[in-house]
Length: 295
Image 1 (cartoon, rainbow, N blue to C red):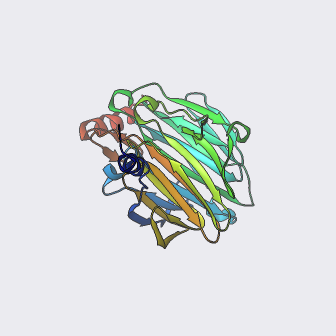
Image 2 (cartoon, rainbow, N blue to C red):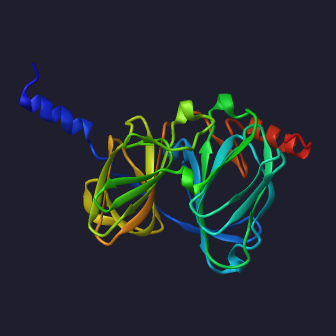
Image 3 (cartoon, helix red, strand yellow):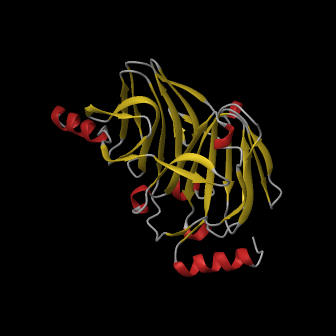
């Protein structure tokens, strides 16, 4: 029979907090037809964020910063997840996908073997604010059929996770609730995508699969992560989290953040612009196929 000390030790191991192993500051970027944004990604070491490839935040009430949108452009080999907090954007692609993304909604697009799409603001003024995440596909699924899905704000579960802590669960399972987002490679990456809001002096500790890589992007306020209460993470910073089974957050002033976790693919990554494959040869083939109008 296990002793009380053994049991306490086991519980301590089981509940190890994930602490920050890398802190990245968002950098200004321009993409599409002049859209200004903040860009965060794992480059030059994408492996540290596997299976995630990139995260962009776009936020402006100046139409000049977003009105050009993202005209037709191609993708192959991964998925894009666009989550909007404010404003409206229209998606159209060459596989027949159409949709307007509104506040609180998500567009989940699987590029697979190839897709060409546009994302254009459905407004001429006002605040446009949201995020786009790139999620890698396993090698065996990079050439699957392209797909597109709209997830309305009403489909995204709202969670009460602790006093003063709420969450919107886009994908994965948290607190016994499953989000509506479904990755093409979900069997391999099993992504969790949670939008967290903490009131002042609120705290929460959430279990995460020990098998998953994880990071938190703070987009409002500041938050203490893991065991380090002396170094709060301010808005505009991404914290890559180390090993452990719990993601612990506390905010003195209030904060909003995205928590992302996924099973690493541990496969080679070849990344060139809008194409993410496993080898340079596959990148060259993607470029040739696009030029040959095979998307």
